[in-house]
Each structure stands twice: as structure tokens, then as C-alpha cells.
Amino acid sequence: MTKKRGFRIDLHVHSMYSGESLAEPRDILDAALERGLDGICITEHHSLYASRPFDELKREYPSLVVLRGVEISTDSGHMLVYGVEDTEWDDWGKNRLVNGQELIDRVRKLGGIAIPAHRGRSWPAQATRKACISRWTRGLPPLEILQP
Ligand SMILES: [Zn+2]
Image (tube, rainbow, N blue to C red):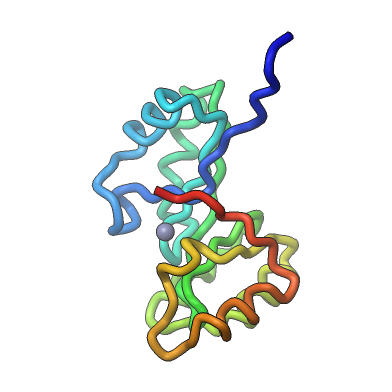
């Protein structure tokens, strides 16, 4: 009997287009396969557009699910957004902190999902940890559990 392995996906990945990584898209896709992942989601900062190069490459990696999301800085920390193809992210959050609840409401209205990114690492100085947890736990799924 074989042990059920499940589906392994990294939902928070940055490339050279985020300013947080030096990795080129092809290197990321190769690394995901080498690590035995079934999928990845590219979440560049404040830009869904920035991850477009992955759409062009994913045909070359048929065994890997390649999704695109976005990471937004809010007054409650960084939030990962999935399932929304909103072209206004750049204007919306690039030059100011977005209100966390505003983000959640907007994403829900558009049919997507928002989750806190790297919990505990992106707490804004003016917010207390308790206040952030309180805001985030109002209907938000705490999905990001492991991070390097
Ligand atoms: Zn990030």
C-alpha cells in the first residue's frame, strides 16, 4: 500500500520582478520541480502584472501547477491575495499602506481570498500583534503555516 502524499504547493513565491529575490522565473520553476512540489503561486508585491512571465513559461512545465497571486502591504501586515485578477493593485497599494479590512472586503467582493503572509514577521510598528491577530481572524483562513 502506498502512502498518500497529498498535493504540495508553495503559495508565496517571489522572483526577480518583486525586488525581494534574484531568481529568474525559469530557475524558480526548475527549483520547484527539483524539490518535488506539485505547484507554486507567484506573489509579487503590489503587481499581478509582474508575474506575467510565468504564464509564458508554464507550458514548458506541464507537471507543475503555476498560479499567480499578489502580495499587498497593509496597515495590518502583508496579505497574500489569490483568485483576483485586479489590474489596479499597483495604483492601490504601491505608495501607501492599504487598510487591511478594505483589502479583505475588496478581495471577497471580487471572489478571491486574502490571507496573512509570514505572520509574525510583517507586523507594522504602529500596530500591536494582538490587534493584527484580531483583524486577521475575522473570517480569514490562516493558510500560510510553514515558511523558510
Ligand atoms: Zn512575500
